[in-house]
Length: 432
Image 1 (cartoon, one colour):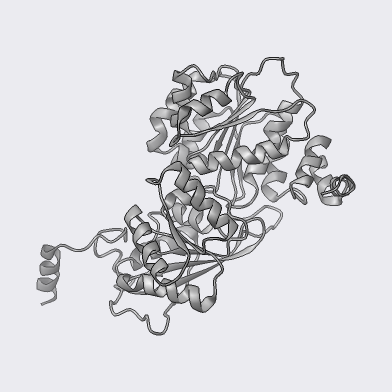
Image 2 (cartoon, rainbow, N blue to C red; image 1 turned 90 degrees about the vertical axis):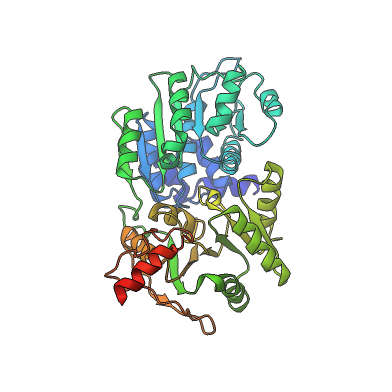
């Protein structure tokens, strides 16, 4: 973008809307340069109180601009601060995954490029050697974007001090406040100043988790835009389809849909590492550019796979739920639930990888007789019925139980647990 174009963009009515929210001219220009045409609903709702120093619990749909909302707020605080010659860590952004740490760090660096005083943003995460990250933190950093485990590792090595943190952001806050991160979050909390601003953002927040979040914050303002903005802005335009298919036929159906519908790219969610590798291998044997993405890959391999998918070198990405949180894949047209997610919240995060930034998208779920009851529960929680459909040549032979029998297998529809022989004998006796 030329300087003249930048100026025109910054003076446009939509960018003027950013100014009306209290954003500084420097950040209005930075937002325009990064392609922000104006504030999204969550940015309009969150920026004024965040810029005034309020604590926030903010719920908004996936792809709605949450990173921009907290990023612009914390950067404006840094811009107005008289920073000493030596650096201190003024803002800490905690995220649940390595990929999200990289992504958020890149957004913050790009938005701060126009500052008179440079802003140092460090992204730190596990799965790679700690030494380069320690070197990068020499002299500290104004903003640290971190996964909890690696942050504590760096604290123990005296590479990071958190006593000056003024803004704490939890991105994908509901995931970070779950039991799996409880010990690490408790230790980090003890290292932070008692007086600080807290900005907690996510697309989903169970009531119990929201109550836990409030315990971290001081008189937080709750913004709930998860079902659409108060001004009537629509939720992400995701068309949902539910295709009935027997579990052994899912891979063949997936290949059929990719080829017949000519999907240029598709993100496919599976339940396990083994499934991601196994299905990717089968698709490659039929000439499709496919790769697996899961937590047991090295960080270098994960980075290469995502880069290839972003670049269009891969048509199909077979991923576990680690790809469901926060990853932004521009223009992704289709998401497939090869295995159903464990919960309605996970379903929201999975399908939210498509239809981002105002685009439309398609989410397809494979539903078998064994998982029908679980999918009905997901429908109930999301408040949306998805009509079942069948594809010629892939009609299921197994029959789903009627709706009046919720989850007869007692599995919750969760990934492939089968009835025992005793259960089958009991059922046969009861039916006889």
